Image (cartoon, rainbow, N blue to C red; front, side, top):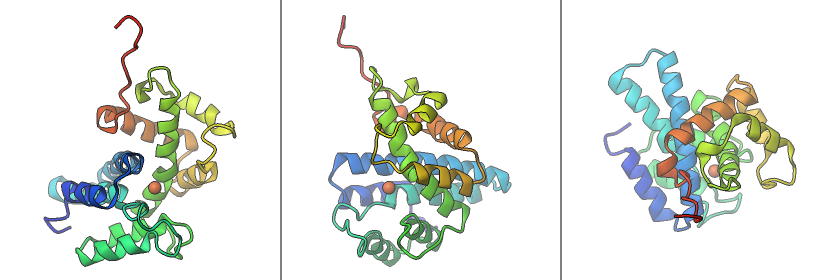
Length: 207
Ligand SMILES: [Fe+2]
């Protein structure tokens, strides 16, 4: 990646294109999960230092940028194509653009690379994990447990907009069980709970 293609630039672009807080938070949550998968894959491939940093950076950026254009261009004719065109004009690396195209299952671009698969797999799950946190009395992701998430996945009435099938398909694309995939993403989001605004609220009683 060019030196200008940083996490900071990706965040800046997300904020330029997206004014809504929940879509910004979504990009951030997905990026935390994809970044964790990038770090695992970098370690598996034996990448070190600068090479590893650049590799993981593509995962972070793909997470932050994948829905960048959704607020302005939500139709299937435009999302994520308009965003990808803008990113290509800025010279963002092809693997990042490919993953963003592939996360939209109607784009005609198949999930091929590990990055493509990780982005697809984390997109719906990060939203589901956020929903699991927000129903806790503390609203904290730190109080969410893998087994509770798996149980809620079977409850069709809970967070009904989240496509369970994308979560299970995503896990199998990554060669993981759903339990492992949930554990990886939950762990990643818990480690960055503060950044995601999911570290919980102090009880109003007795404060
Ligand atoms: Fe998304």
